[in-house]
Image (tube, rainbow, N blue to C red; front, side):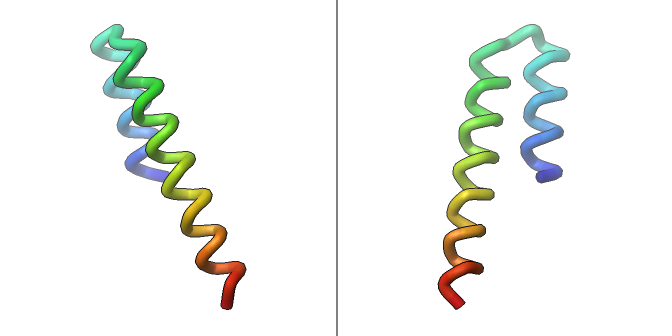
Length: 41
């Protein structure tokens, strides 16, 4: 979550929308995978 937020802030600060979207997709992907792994137990 911290990585996602810092990535969003970094993208906004640099006015780089692609960095912002990449951080969002990567962060949500990691969160989704972590949720799946936790639910398997």
